[in-house]
Length: 216
Image (cartoon, rainbow, N blue to C red; front, side, top):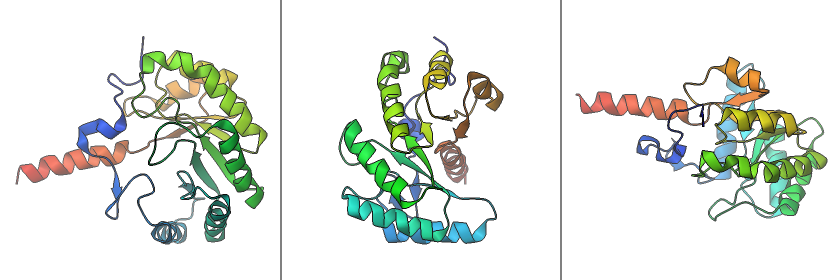
């Protein structure tokens, strides 16, 4: 079975270098106030529209979730990634719960691009079994679309035939995490509408820096 990356191990395991920002680990470890300060700096520094990795919204409570998205909208962001995994726990939120959360985000703005991230095929799952998860993925995609999501982000999906199937069956435009060796044209041919680089550039940078430091 062909994969878009020769050895698509979970990115968390790659060279032992998982992304940290300003001293905080990934996974909502950064205080939300620090997070919004950073977003504000980026919005003010660039001329391009800014989308934000909102993770799970930095909140379980729906009232706080609404407050958090309002804070980001006031900064001028135009889109978010919003994931369905349980940070600090295991597995995914059930569909009804995640839909309720997406509805809160949609109610905050009609213009916000909500990229619904589904982690069914991420975090150590075996790419060879991803075909058995497609029905469940599409069920979530349809439910997320019904409550206002604009895109479907499927990190970890790396098999061309499965990517093509998901793109053909998804009611939402599909976002794939691009592996370093994968030509963008190949993903476009499969029907991918949007790509993310994820932590790969950071990991490559840290590998190079670590190597150079060890040679000093």
